[in-house]
Amino acid sequence: MFNNSSKILFMTIMIIGTLITVTSNSWLGAWMGLEINLLSFIPLLSDNNNVTSTEASLKYFLTQALASTVLLFSSIILMLKNNMNVEINESYTSMIIMSSLLMKSGAAPFHFWFPNMIEGLTWMNSLILMTWQKIAPLMLISYLDLKNLLLISVIMSVIIGAIGGLNQTSLRKLMAFSSINHLGWMLMSLTISESIWLIYFLFYSFLSFILTFMFNIFKLFHLNQLFSWFVNSKILKFTLFINFLSLGGLPPFLGFLPKWLVIQQLTLCNQYFTLTIMMMATLITLFFYLRICYSAFMLNYYENNWIMNTSFNKLNMNLYLFMTFFSIFGLFLITLFFFML
Image 1: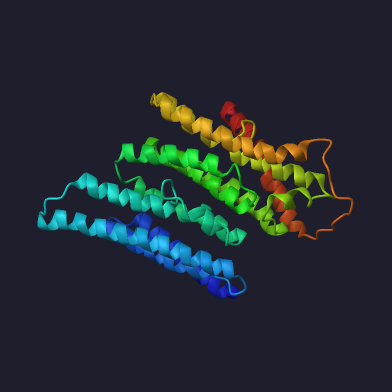
Image 2: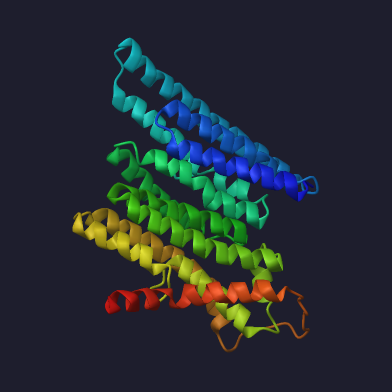
């Protein structure tokens, strides 16, 4: 197991790698930043006590290395075209770059590595993979002007994210398919404006953090653990499932706000067909979240007779409840704020 100092070092290099990519003004610079990011994230994944994490880090390395190779290849082709006046169709190279970036971010139809890999990670690593590791590829995708290819990826991502999560009992895979679904929305928001994408990304990261924080404290990895766990604390169980619904985007909660913004902008752009597909897919994700929460909210709910005294840090619980307050009432507070302006 790595000690904390090396973790801090790799974490810092990972952040620097992403910042290099976002701030670079050439594809080669962006590729370099992505490589630094990749090579510093892999030591964070591998854990000596866990075989599955080593397997996951290898899977991650192989897929990301493939995507990086394709990205480097296409950026070299672009440089040949610009510097040596070689006749190359630019739309083809843009498509190659786009597909490599979609693979890096884990969007459909290049998503197959994502749920399998996340199964072998700890919750904190999963959170980094679902949030921070998406920033650099998505920023690079925003530089490309390929609406049609992006639209295909958006529709596939929301549908696969919705249908893939229906049959899952593993919470990590559930979160992975949810992430693919949200990625579809994020890619769509990129086509509208970067500010809406940033808002969506921040809200999604916040809600994912609340859930993974809770799962990490109680070491929850499967659905059946959820139902037999919070026996002595009804509030914890209730807030956890409400956060689930918030992540799904159920209207009175905070998770609906970024979706609301995207829906509003898409209606202004008259993109009703795409919007309908995205909303239908989100309803399916909400269905499986509601299916999980339904039995816990019911009065005739079966519980274990024995009490499990789960010891947890008071500070952690207060932080969780504070964040949950914003998750539940955030939409009301923001609406009130706008009405008062």
